[in-house]
Image (cartoon, rainbow, N blue to C red; front, side):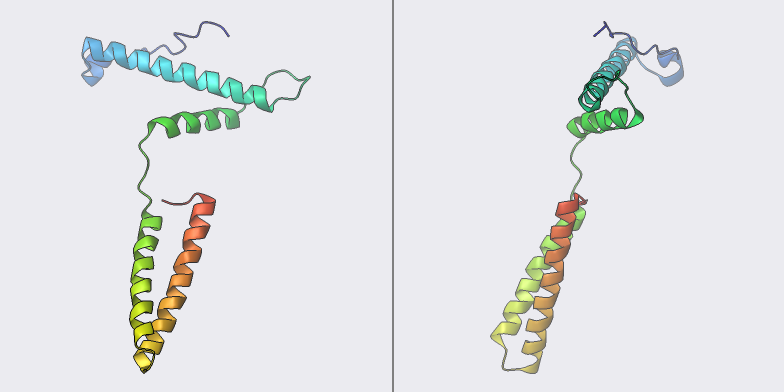
Length: 138
């Protein structure tokens, strides 16, 4: 691998146009170059892993996108799993409804509460499993 320290040349005046301090400008340029180097290195590694044994190295847009997702996944804070959070809360509410209905199975409302709570809890459970399996827990 070649020396890729200055892979990106930033030609805009960060201090004048965007209000950067000299140290902020230098740190920004270094950070952009570090990211570009890391992206290139990861894309190259992914390209090498997916190439055939006798073919030349080709780094495709998919390799670059995968590398970027890998890097951003490591540095971005995790998102709050809102769908899973809502289903967990619904799970407790359904359990309370099933419990209240089960304690009053001798009454009509108890049977309805028990049946509806059990049915709703089943749907909530299926939604949780599908979302977690597909990785759509956001």
